[in-house]
Length: 156
Image (cartoon, rainbow, N blue to C red; front, side, top):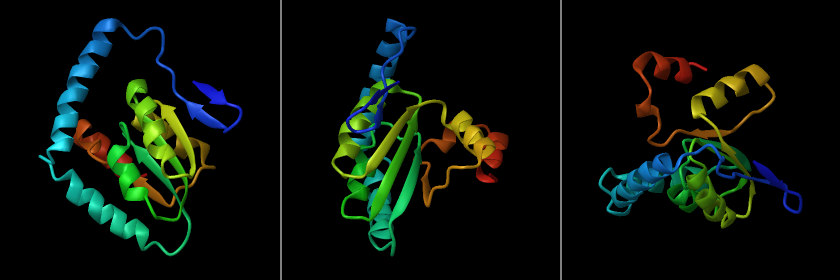
């Protein structure tokens, strides 16, 4: 991960140990996921419309942690015209985070993008105890966990 000294934005860089086959697999899966989003097969648009309404009515500036942010394309739309001051997006895919950087830049808030396993990241946050967020979004990422893992994450 590199830090751009002019903007103090963390820019994820693909690691050298990512194999071509893993990238190829991700790209194929990502294409399918983008079709699901673009065709609204799972109701993403309605969910993010509700999120936007909630955040637009938020009465004070807020910070957001977005676990499993992907490319943040829908989240960036939900954050437009809100009082967000800081966005932190976490995803295991560095390729998705590169796109998220561009999408969240449209908002104009401070932003941090972290290439990490969301669940390990939340464990680290709990251990650290110094980071607080007003809004935590886990959009379509929680289903990847086993029931006992979901319970552990939700109870934090």
